[in-house]
Image (cartoon, rainbow, N blue to C red):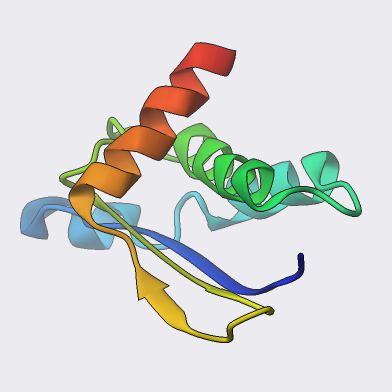
Length: 97
């Protein structure tokens, strides 16, 4: 299975927006480069993206402030995850840590 598109986004509080905008981008990019492996499963790619996000922010990663979307190559359909799906991915991530 090939992933065409994966986006994880953190929603910041308005007062923190300018302070944190882009502040963790380099950290997240470095984490992704260091930990990405060829032929990772979909679940592992999502976990990698969430770990990179968590490594690069001061705020707690939670279903309320994360948006997750993806497109898988087999169906090429855009999917925006629900808060419950995001929570499930975060729970799985915590089990492995």
